[in-house]
Amino acid sequence: MAAWSATATTGSTDEGDGSVTQPRDPEMIQHEIEDIRAKLAGTLDELVERASPRRVASRGATALSESTRARAIIGAAAGMVVAMIALRITRRVRD
Image (cartoon, rainbow, N blue to C red; front, side, top):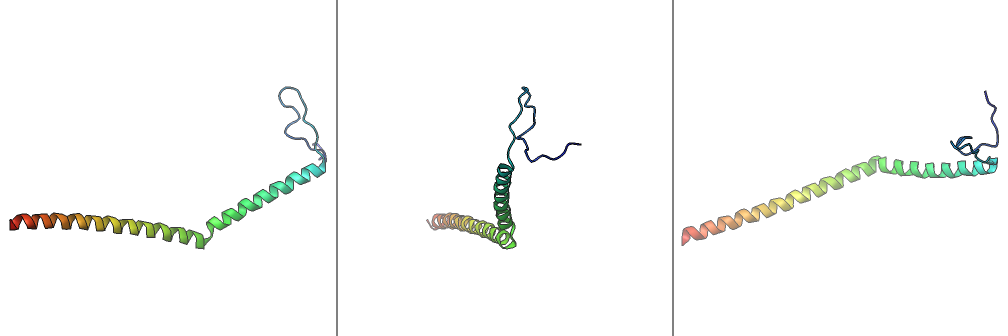
């Protein structure tokens, strides 16, 4: 079993062409860890915001409202078409 070394390497020691990667110092590794933690924290915050019950309910209400509005517009247009047809039929019957 290999002992843990403070000088970790980037990737594997054999890149397939026989070259060995350069060791990184502990400060560089610590900096990379902090950067990754910050990115993960931001991603987690975004996920929490997207999945919050208030957000989910708001998106659902918006979708329902848009769906209801579209149905109302289609219904009104269909009503106008029926009214115009009825008016033409009525005029033809009178003539």
